[in-house]
Amino acid sequence: MRFIKSTRHPFTDSARKRAALIRKQKTEREAMPLFAAEIAADQRSSDDVMQTRAENWAASEARRRQRRAERWRQARREIDAMPPRMRRKVRAAWDGAPYPADPVYLLDFLHELRVGRRSINALPFTPKPVNARGYSISIGDQP
Image (cartoon, rainbow, N blue to C red; front, side, top):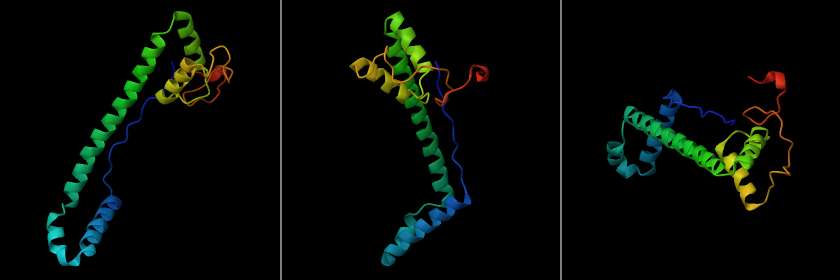
């Protein structure tokens, strides 16, 4: 079954992010000049803020990947619950569908089949070899 492997993007600490943080903190202090000293005392250092952002980024990335994996598992459960003949047809249709190999697209495809908006015998596309992005490929181009 075709799918797109989820990419990982590590948090990058850059000079631009640090400069933006400094500008933000300066704007916060200048917004209330009478309390500038108290506001400055409460503001964290650039290193602390970047460390927190990196930790939050990693946690957010893990949650995003977990949600995506759960969607794939949900789609696989739905397909596995189908009768064998229907399962083969659905998998063949999905493998030849012009949609990106994303769990959201697969779940939508399954939902449309389930509610009768789409019939497996009358698909709006002709199943043909496609890559993970849903673009047609010739038989010789397959890995």
